[in-house]
Image 1 (cartoon, rainbow, N blue to C red):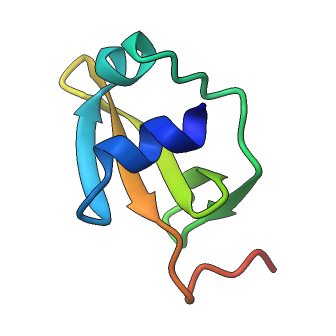
Image 2 (cartoon, helix red, strand yellow; image 1 turned 30 degrees about the vertical axis):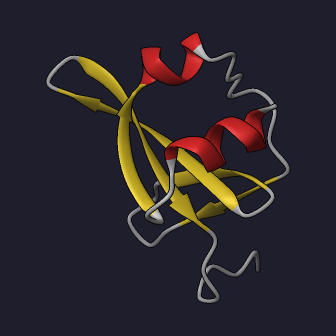
Length: 75
């Protein structure tokens, strides 16, 4: 279900969406297949090729949605 929801909301490859909108669809951030940590220390969680990162923007929780890229290695 998480993959279907992430695919639905991330058609462009990079999207920012309110947390409540995803969780209202049944999205559960505890279910993921792997993660990737960028150089800034942000940890993106992935459901296969669709990734998400929880951000707090002026007190509002949002998800940054991305699609797995070749430079994102798990090493």
